[in-house]
Every structure is written in C-alpha cells, then in structure tokens.
Amino acid sequence: MKLSISPAALEKTRHRNVISVAFGQKSWRIFTASGPLGQAAKKRHQLLGSPDEMVSEIIPEGTSHRWAMAVRTKDARMNAEDSRTIGAKIVRKIPSGINRIDIEAVPPSSWKDLLPVLEGMELALYDQKHLGYKKDPKKPRILEVVLHTGTRSPSVRSEAQAMLSEFERRMEAVKTARILVDTPPVDMGPEDLATYVRDRFSGTEISVRIRDEKWLRDNGFNLHLAVSSGSERPPRLIHLTWGSGPRHVAVIGKGVTFDSGGLSIKHPNKYMEDMKSDMAGAAAVLGLFDYLRGMEPPKDMTIHGIAAATDNMPDAASIKPGDVITGHAGKSVEILNTDAEGRLVLADSISYAVRDLGADRVLTLATLTGACMVALGPYTAGWFARGDRWARTISGAINSSGESFWRMPLSENLRSALKSPIADMKNVGGSYGGAITAALFLEAFAGDASFAHMDIAGPAFLSSSHGPYSKGATGFGVLTLIELVNSLS
Image (cartoon, rainbow, N blue to C red; front, top):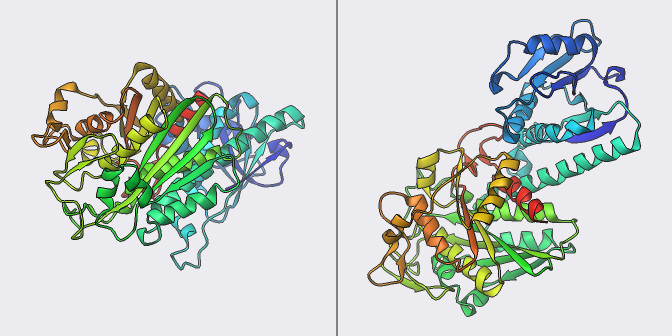
C-alpha cells in the first residue's frame, strides 16, 4: 500500500473514491467527509451496532463522488486488532477497478486511532504471490491511499509524517516475519535463515553473531544439537544485539525451520504439511529487530534477540525416545517424545541468555504445543509469566498491541509431571495441561531471571483467512514485541 499526505481538504480533491471514517460512538465529525456524503454515512450507521457491521458501501447522492464507503471504527468494545479487522474489511470491499482512496485525516489527536485501521488495510493486501513461486499474470494489488489533512500547517504535516513512518516500520516488520514463515522449507533452512539475517542487518546499528554447530558443541548446546541430529542441514544460533546498556533483556524465538516430529513422527496428512511454520517464534523476533533498524540504540539497556534454528528430522542419527541429554544449563533431560523438540532448543538458549549474557528478563515465543490450541482455539495465544513486574510490563504491551493473548498459569501442582527416574527432568508431562507443563519446562532453565513465555501455536499460522490475515503466516507477536520494547526504552 502506497501512503501519502495531502494538505488539500477532501471535498476539493478531484478523485471521486472516498472512505468516510468516523471515530467514536457519538462524534461523527472526526474523519468524516463533509456535506451530503458525511450525512449519508451518519444516517447509514445509526442502525449499526456490532463490529461486523461497521463497514458498508453507501450511495454518495448529492456529491461528486462515484463510490464511497462509511466506516465506524471505534467503540468501547474495540481494541487495535478490531480496528485492523475493520481496515481489512475496507480493502476487501473496495471494487477491483479502484486503486486510489482518499481519506479525511483531521485532527492529529485521532491519528493513533487511524493507525491500526491503516495497518489492517496493509495486512489484508499481503499476498504470497510476492514470494515469486506462483506464475500468475495477475499482479498483487497495490492500493494508493491519500490522507487529507485539510491544512498546510508544518506541525500537522510533521505529525502526519511521523505516523506514516511508524506505520511503514511496523508493517515492514510484520511482513518480514510473514515472508520468513511462508517461504517453503526447501529455501528456508537454518543456514538460509542465518544468511538472511546477516544480509538484512549488515551495516545497521544491530550487531549480528551467527553461531555454527562447532560453537554450539563447544558451548554445551547439546539439547539444540540433539534436535538437529537427524537433519543434513546443520543448526544455527542467531544472536542479534541492540543497545549497549547494563540492563539485559532477552527475546528468544523457536526457529525449527521444518518439524517432521523426528522419530516420534507426525501424521503426514494432518500435522506435518504446515510445519514450515514452526519457526514463527524466531520470525517474530527477527521482525522486531527489523523494526529496530535505524532507531537510535539505548545506552541504558541491551536487547538480545536469539533465534534458535534447526530442523527436526528422522534419521539413523536422530535422538531416540529414552535418550538422556545434558544441555547448556547442566540439567539432564530424558527425551520421551522427539516431537516435543521446541522446548529442548529453547532451553539451551534460555540458559545461555541468563548465564552467559546476564539477562535478568527473558521472553520466549514459540509455536510450542497443540495443547494450547485445544485450550484457546486457533486465534488466541497463551502466555505465562514469573515475576510480577515483568508480567505487568508484558500485559501492558499485549493490551497496546491488541493481539489476542490469554494468560495461563504456571501451575506448581503440575511440576511433578516433569519428574524422571533417570534424569533431572523429562521433556513431556502427562496427558493433561500440556501447554502448562511445556512452560514449566522452559521456566526451569531461566534461573533467577524474570521469565515469560508465549505459546503462539494457533494464531501464528492460519488454515484459512481470519480478521485482517489471509491463509498462512500472520506475523503474530511482532506488534506485541514492538510495544514491549518501546515501553522499555
């Protein structure tokens, strides 16, 4: 989507395709086209109530416009994600022959409400054809959107430009995560991901270290190596750093670029076909750092981004149920299910962040358990936290982003399910509470650091379109991470 700013009033534009956007249940003055068009929008929406009814085409009688749309974008029940859904509905209702839309954008005080609407429009325009694998003569749609401020005030233009810059950086970050996850696994192995990161952040304020299998072996990442043992593609640990301050925060993403389940193999027709998505946690972390490119790094804090990359494949060399592996933290783990591999990869990275990097706050993101999807459905992620202050900070970021999360308990009465007769712990619990026991497993490697975990297995990759997202990768978690780091800076 191409966004630009015009000082001209909307009614003076020569273009005849208009979106009339009204913010608030009672006030229709804000972002509303003036004259008969605005009155038509208001009249049309007097009968509308639910978020599903907030976008409609109207007949622009008594105006020079040939097509218009009325949108009510905010009431007490709506959050930012609801507004993004509204934005997506706008795009999907725009006739195919219309490639330019004019929006009245005044006053500046309401631009924060317009931002998620624009984000929803951009998210809905994402098309996997951009990846270049499909030969299709029909090019992906490019929509030009002009925001009319109705004033030549330098301060208003500056504020509008700042909003557009924020929009572009946020959407580029989400797009980065979506592309990484949607790319076929034949072209997105651990080394491919590492190469992408090295090229993407070269010459920026972000420091990149790529650790190979020898480094992993020398530094005791034996759980990570165990997961990769069945793959011909070697593992990588991707470590990004932004800032140089004494406070260290680590954001760690599971980067299993393809998960067959290993010897505990997945059903090929039911669970395996979407397993290129098992690196969505790592993609979210990389999306965050894409947003941070070009920003001035903080001097009082260091943000570490870690993407733990590997495949999980069956082979004669693969780890086997019954194996006992001792990882970076010095804890031995009995492997009872090789398809519970994400927690093994993350465990070494958590220990590394706390013990070697000095992180006192840790957050992990992972498409970790089907159990979380059973509990919360495909559109909501579960999150867990230890440490009240860290939990409040993350909760605030979630609320600001509008992404759908639900806090889950770190239930002490399930910790015994991870006990093993032969090792310090085992990598799976019992039949119940699988998302909780997985989070408890990860927490055991965080030492005294404040710890949080996001299980994004459902909303990171969709089997069909939902809200502003099409089938496939969504970039879920990126916007929450952006809000989190902005709240820390």
